[in-house]
Length: 326
Image 1 (cartoon, one colour):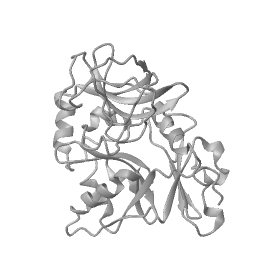
Image 2 (image 1 turned 180 degrees about the vertical axis):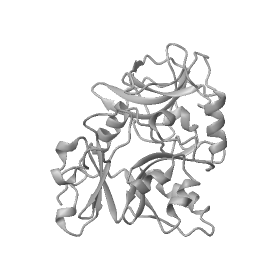
Image 3 (image 1 turned 135 degrees about the horizontal axis):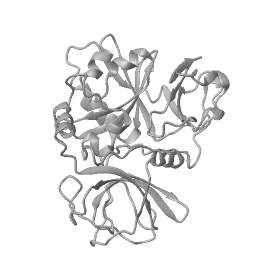
Image 4 (image 1 turned 60 degrees about the vertical axis):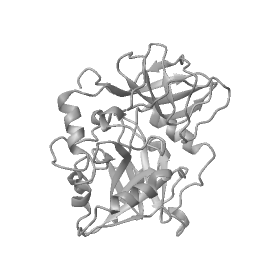
């Protein structure tokens, strides 16, 4: 089976294999992993005991075990942390990024007809290539797809080489879909609802206990969420993931992803719902941004300074924001 879409080198793959893999994940992530057994890919948060999201995982029901797609820069710390909880469970967790590559297709036209899951299905595995519908907020009739394939081996199963700009293009698609991601600079910064994961079918409130569940459930049922993920258009400047900012209307927050587009940037940011005029402990201790013309978009800690107000345009999300309900 040929692959005609570029690999996404910024992503890694962890694999959970063994008789207890689903049960183990059920106690670790926010979604109901029993749905994987029915062949559905899932979006889920892996959180600390304090309910702070350590990683956003795209889980695929692969024949070799559950595959978890996440940014390469947090794959190793996520692996090392989650392995501490294996104890006596019959599960093997490993980074299989040297074995599997992740590619991205923006719609079904980028795939061969035999690679597209059938109507009503979201996952297909054929000739060692797994194709899964991307779980995001668009609910589009023309969805994006993950394509996970072996490195090397039969040339028919190789993906197209990673192209320059492929990472930024895929991240931009995530931003426009309102799809949150956690990188090194933002790991353990936000409760799942701040990333709109409750609006993206990434949290089960009925499955029972998992790490961080108490805080996530309390946030949902007591309505204490004060920040939500929003989509922004930013002017030219020095922007980085994790950077705090203050909008002209007084709201404050922190960038979770930012990509250059034309002469400006598009971004996702967790913002306060009210114009408090200050950044609290959950969104950082500073509130300004630089107005220099450099274009840092990496995932370092960044950090504005100087207390300047940002002229940003808020863009619509493709799903209900839900700010008024929790």
